[in-house]
Image 1 (cartoon, rainbow, N blue to C red):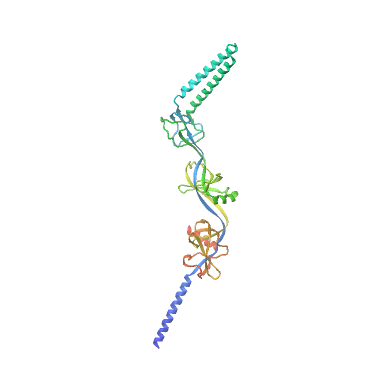
Image 2: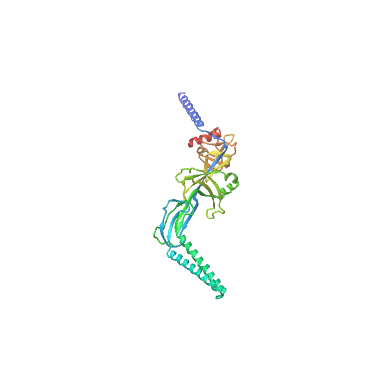
Amino acid sequence: MNRQMLVFAVGVMLMATSCKSTKEKSIATVYTVTSPEITSTFIAKDYVANIQSEKNIEIRAQKGGVPQDIYVDEGQTVHAGQPLFRIATVGAQEELEKSKAETEQASIDLQNTSTLASNNIVSKNARKMANAKLNAAMADYRLARLHSHLSLVKAPFSGIIGRIPNKKGSMIQEGDLLSTLSDNSNVYVYFNVSEPEYLDFRLHASERTKLPLTLILANGTNFSSQGHFQNVEGEFDKSTGNIAFRAKFFNTDHLLRNGETGTVRMNIPVRNAIIIPQQATYEVQDQKYVFVVDTRGYVHARPIKVVFEKQDVFVISEGLSQNDKFLIDGVDKVNDGDRISCHYKNPAAVIQSVKLKAN
């Protein structure tokens, strides 16, 4: 009898322990579910950018010779018409003096021939030939003067002098690079866009072309002024499948220089966006899923399509409707087909808590 009572007592204790364990387990498996947040937002799209001066030219020697004088230094700001280089051209002065003398001689010959032709001593054709020789001599003289003027190189516009590869006294040939000149008052910023993004841009061109653009510099800081879209290149790059966009920025403080790099950020507005927390998703073979919970508490894996990614949230286009309820915690603890206990949390509160955690 005592033995039977002992067995009974042990059984009661085991049942009590089992009930307590089941109760604790039940409390531990109450998960949180929510619905997608439907709202208007913007998506920040970043593109690698190349910065070029609005006006940038190469200054090249128009005749061979020796740089006799270099009036400027690399990086110097110059004004339109300011002398930059003087090139000593071998024989240029002699050519000028010779052509001048030949012009004077041809003029005298024409006068003498005209007098003789008036007295019928020579034919009228002789006068025409003398006149032609004078015209040829005058053309040579004008060309010689031009060559002498080309020896002095002036700035065609105001800007900043680039590298000067040929120093004073070095021999240069016609067409050799003397320097570059950049007007950095305004700059063009080029960035490449994929074909799908280009098509989307064209579909919303009236809105997108008015969007202000942010330029992020190489050190991670934002440029002081915003830029605006200007145009699109005429064709796609066959090797990359991208097409170049051009934006314009006012470089009032002259911080930007030709050849710099950066990042263009375009904030694209999205209306009625479907937003869910990233923590609610899991991935299998490059496909993202969420666990949708039905009215009876059963869990079902459902694929979703992510179109944009923001900080700690996804913007999706397929997979969930406004009334769907999906799991936002314990995603790694449940399986497709499980039945769970859950409580509902407002979508706006969920997104807000995600943002607060990110900050």
